[in-house]
Length: 201
Image 1 (cartoon, helix red, strand yellow):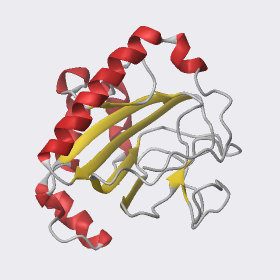
Image 2: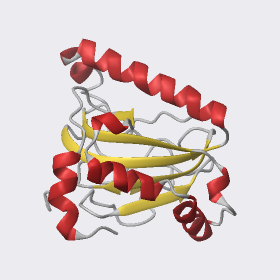
Image 3: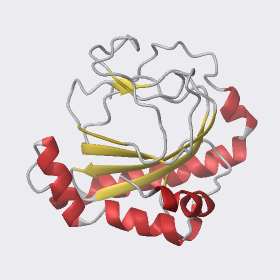
Image 4: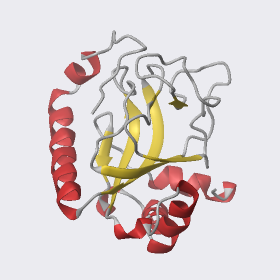
């Protein structure tokens, strides 16, 4: 998906958030290479090409919301389907490497809502250039084993309408502020979560 020669620039240009989790993309948080990549991922041409693979006609008709993650806390990654306001989601990983012996933080698509081991396909390590995309359904279960640390991801979600995008953007900006204020408290919250924990929208 990505030229290996771009890895260094993308790493340098990746946003340096104070909190953990996914936050709405803002151009002034990122360098030129990341903003250029976001522009490509949200182009109508790319959306329609991806939509063909997912069985969604004219995916470009749905507004895209880009969120970016630099790091996670242990509470992140519980099993979920994505909210009903999402039509499709894409995850593009930008981590130069991932421990070969570690399953933590590796994306899993699941057959059941309360079993992280019920994998439909082999888990996906979040290494540089790996792209995972899926159509949101009532059974599009996915998640990962608890992980804490840096895990660089660009997520694009195509939403049902502009109102949903505006609502999620506001919520994401508020979340960023709250996590900046709470800091250590946010890291402590949910750190003992069960690996099969789920939040089903």
